Each structure stands twice: as structure tokens, then as C-alpha cells.
Length: 281
Ligand SMILES: [Mg+2]
Image 1 (cartoon, rainbow, N blue to C red):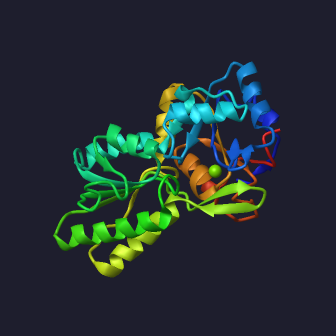
Image 2: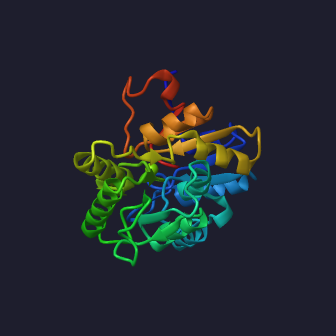
Image 3: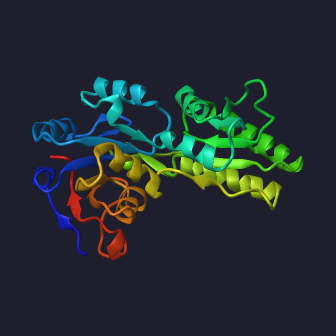
């Protein structure tokens, strides 16, 4: 399949509902992106459902909706599908209920972990060096250097005691857009760093389990919340997560030029976007 250049407005009649990535599509660290407000208004005017499908596990849905509202984007908490929601299923499936977990991230990230059944602790909090699990949720909300060093130290101690340490990363994204052509590191990059550090100290250190896009679970959650057989398109800015994940989940996909830029052969045909958008206009 060869991706076709398009405008967002051209997609309105083609689909029953719209899944939007957040960072790089609707917003970046500097605010709402060009055309985002208008695109949401057009979807609403067409009477079609939308969901924000985001690897951002740093905000509970209500916090995310309030932030969107502050940027002029009318999105309800019920329309936010966050990788934080996937923690509960993973905790249950991996038998981690009650596990003592250091959570790297915001207070909302700790709330996601607590809702999932983990005994969630912040870096530096009492008991934060006595662990069964480390959740790498976000790059914000804690002192990055101190938090990573604390996670490395406590994780290595747990492994030295023979514990089955679990490493979980809801947000596999390596980088995120900060506005213009500026970018920053995010949770997935921290997870790689922590995994490598623990491996250096303990050869049998575990691999990180990643929950968010490109894994199918978040897309399935979004599809279920819209309702069964609606024809949906995922609009994202990263080929490796938004587009590859959507295609693997059987969804159509539109790439907004951002972190990823389409060039011929940038992805195999079954992982390529159907549509190429400059922005959401
Ligand atoms: Mg993005």
C-alpha cells in the first residue's frame, strides 16, 4: 500500500469514528497544535465519536480533559484512553496485586498504579527502597536523576535478595514533541536506561514489559469504548507506535508529519499509514 496525501477534512466521511494520538497530533508541550480545535469541532458536527488514544500515563482522564479544556480542546474524560488504564489488566495477569512498586512519574501516575492494585510509592518516600516492582510511567513529576538512581539502586537490591523484580512501562514512547522542531526524552527511553543499568549489575535482571502503543491492548480498549464494528482511523505522529500498532490491531491509520516523516519504504506495507496529513486542517 502506498500512503495517500490527504487533508483531515477529507477523512470525515470515510470513517465512523476517529482515534487521535495526543502529543504531536492534538497538542505538544507548547500548547494545542494547529487545526486540532477545528478538527474536533468537525468530528462533533458530523455526529461521530472520537477518542484520544495516548501513551501518556502521567494524567488521569479528568486531569487530561482539564488540560485539553485549558488549551481550547473540548474532550471529555470519558474520551481519553490512556496507557495508564492498562496497568490494572497487567497487574492482574502478572499476579502483581499488592506488589510494592516504585513509580517514576507524577502523582496521577501513582494513582494509576494504586488503582491497578499496586502498593505505589514515590521516589524518596518511605519504603521506596524495598521493592517488588518498578513502574516507569513518565519523565515528569519527580527528580529525574535522583529517581532513576533510586530505581537502579532499589531494583538491584531486590534482585540481590533473590526477588522477582517486575519492570513495567505503560508508555513505550522514546521521545515526544516539545513544539517546533524541539523534542524530549520520555518514559520509554528511561525504561531502556534502567533495564540496561540493572542488567549491568545483575545479568539475570528482567526485561521491561511495555503496555501502551504499539501493543494492541490500547487500541482494543478504544475500539470497545466506541462500540464493536465502527470503522475507525487512528491519527498519529509516530510510525513505530501509532501507525504500526493501529495497523496490527486492524485499524486504518493516518500519519501527521511530526516525530515521524514518511519516506518511501519507511515501513513495510502492512505497517504503513493509509493517509499522510500535514496537520489536522
Ligand atoms: Mg505522538
